[in-house]
Length: 123
Image 1 (cartoon, rainbow, N blue to C red):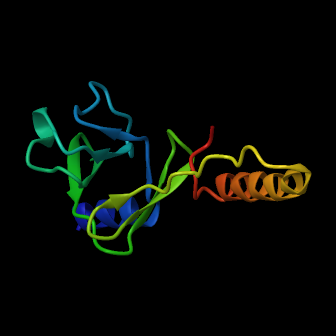
Image 2 (cartoon, rainbow, N blue to C red):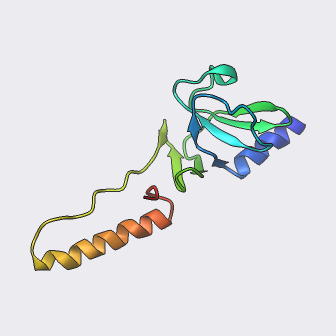
């Protein structure tokens, strides 16, 4: 029962510290990580899973399509759809003539808004 409640807590408050191959040496209670494609130590065999530190042990959750987590290291929301996907901000517009100034300002404003929404990573 306790393990089920811990897994529910991990999923309901889906925020990760970041992505890593190596488990932290001294994780804090409730800390959660996305296990990279090349895990080591106690994370071996859990690539792409969420690893949550609960009651002195790692609990692992296999991602399912539609799962979203907040990556605290980038302030970005990432989505699982067959694999973890992170949106990448497009490059800012450059070049052009005077008419392009307003278009570049609008695109920069849109990119900024998408960063604030957690869709694109913070700069």
